[in-house]
Length: 193
Image (cartoon, rainbow, N blue to C red; front, side):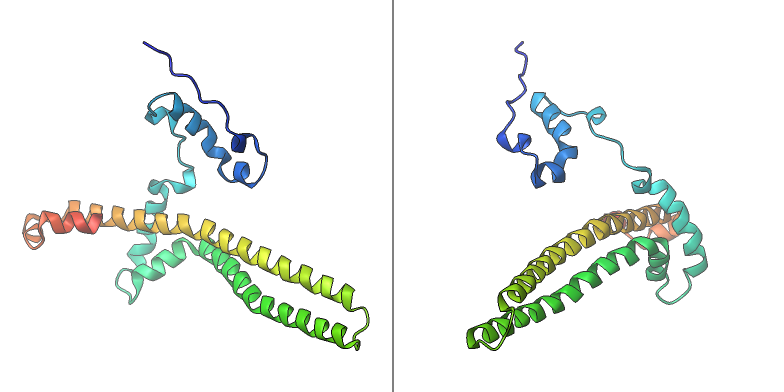
């Protein structure tokens, strides 16, 4: 049998920039996958905060208090993931404020330029440079805030889905035969999925 050789390193694996920083954690998995089939041992274990067991136990405690209230499920999820939702909301707020500020900075650039052309504005070149830098920084941070918002909220969405799936599954296990006859097995499976 032939031994599978590791592929030669590509230029973008050696490049020490954004590409490497963003998917550095995948490089060992890609290298192992290029040598042969991946097995369960090759995949890193989930962080404790991403595992459903601990999250579901907290959910059950909160849900017992709120299940008969109006909007009980939404309030339960909000209480369960309060910190993550608030941090994600702050990133979203920062992005939205910058979406308002960037056009104002552009307006200032145009006003300073107009004064420079008319000759009525002193130090116009310096002020234009300052406003253009502010404009660029505003766009950069707007993009960063959006990325941070998604990086914070996507795991929350996955955790919410996992908790609801576990809750529906556990409820379907506890159903009596009489209650099971009201719902087909396919409907229960679709609710879990």
